[in-house]
Length: 295
Length: 295
Image (cartoon, rainbow over all chains, first blue to last red; front, side, top):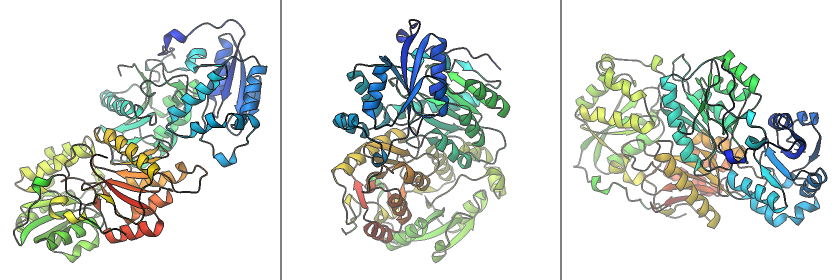
C-alpha cells in the first residue's frame, strides 16, 4: 500500500495556517466526515464547534464541542454560531432534501422564509450556493473542507495496492468526459463505465444507489473485475459546498458491482474514513486512483 | 382525447411507397413493437417476414410469416432472410446484451467472429451501427421503422386529454437539454426532471428501471403530480437503429413516480400499443406530448 500523500487542493490561494485556536463552526450533516473534519481542523490548530443537523448528524460529533439544530431552526443555528464566536463556518456531511411538511420550524425560519423558499428550486449546486450566500449575508465566512482539513483530500496517483491497468485507464478517461458534461448541467458527480460502455449516471439517487444497480448491469458473463466508478466535482463547482466523497461503503458497493476500481479527481474529492477505505480496497482487490485535472 | 396525427419522420427523403407486396424482413427483439411494425408495414403494402430472436421475441410475431433464430445463429439468420427474399430488413424490439457464454452459436457465428467481436465494445450506438454495417456488407438494405411504419411515430403537440402546464414545459425544456448533452456522449435516451431538478438520467439500466427509482426521488411532500419523463433520440442518431419507444407500461411507471407527464421528440419516438398508451395516460391523468425538434 502506498502512503497517503496529501493532494493539492484546487483552490490553493485560500489555504492558510489558522491562528492558533481560531474558531471554526462546522454545520454537520450525516456520516463520519463532519467529525473527521473537526479532528483534522483541530490538529491543524483550529478550535472547532459542531452544529449537528438533527436527524442527520452522527453521534460521533459528540466527541467535540457541539449543539444540535433542526434544518428549519435557522434562528437557533445563527444564535449558536454567534454565541460560540464562529465567524467562519464549514458545511459538511450528507443531507437528504427535507420533506417540507415534516420540518421543525422556528421563528428564524419564518423571518428568512423568502430567501429560504428559493433554496427549493433548481439543482443541488444552485441550492447550496444560496445556502452559502445566506450565511454570508448574515455576516459569516463560508470556508471549504479543503481549506481547514486538507489531509482528507484524495492524493494524485494510485493510493491502494492495486493500480488501474490500460483498459481501466481508458474507462476512467471516458467516465471523466461524461462527468464533466453532466457537471456542466448541474447533475450528480458519479459515473460508472465498463468496457467503454456507460453503465450508469448519477443524478438525484446518489452514488450508493447508482452502484447498487450496476450489480446487474455489469454482468457480462466474464469473471474478471471490469469497469470504474469515477467521482469528480462539477466544472466550476464551488469546492466549499458539497465536495464529492468516497468511503469504505463506496468500495464495498463498487466491489459488488464487479468494478475494478474507483478513480477520483485528485485534491477535489474527500476520503471518508481513509484508513478503512484503503484497507477495504486492498482486501477486495480494487484500485483507488486520484486523477490529476488533466485526467 | 386528441386524434393521433402522424408525426413527420425526421429522415423524410427515405420515406417511400412500397411496390405492392415488397418483401420486408423484420428482425424482432422483445415487446409488442415487432408485430405492430409488421402490421403497419403490411397495411401500407409490404409483405413482412419476421425472424424472432429466440428468448427475446414475443409470441405475437406468430400472427405473421416468421421463423426463429438465436442471437448467435448468424448463419441461420442470413440463410432465412435470403430464402424469404427479404433484401430489405428492419431491426426492432428490445434486446438485452447477451451473456456471451450462454449463446447458442452456429458456424455462421464463427465465420463472422472477427466482425462480431467488435460489437461488444463501445456504446449502444456503436454496437448497432456495426450490426447494420454487418447486414449491409452481406448485401441487405437496413431500413428504419419510420420508413415502413410511420403511423407508429409520436405526433407533434399533446396527444392525451391533459396538456403540459407552464411548469411542465420548463421541465421539458431542461430535460431535452440534458438528453441532448447525454446523447452526444452515446448515453441513454431518457431523463426525468421535476421542479427544474434532474432526478434521474438513463444509462444502461433502461427507462423502466430509471422510472422505478424516481418513486422515492420525486417524493417532496407535495400531493400534486410534478415532473416529466423526456425520451429523445441522440443527436445524429441513425433512426434506423434503436429508435426510442414509450408504451403503456412507461405511462404506468411515470404515474407511480408522481410525474405529470411524458414528452418525446415528435416523429422520432415510437409509440408501442398506441391505443392502450393514450387510454392509460387519460385514465391516470398524465399528459403525452410530442415536442418539435426546436424542443
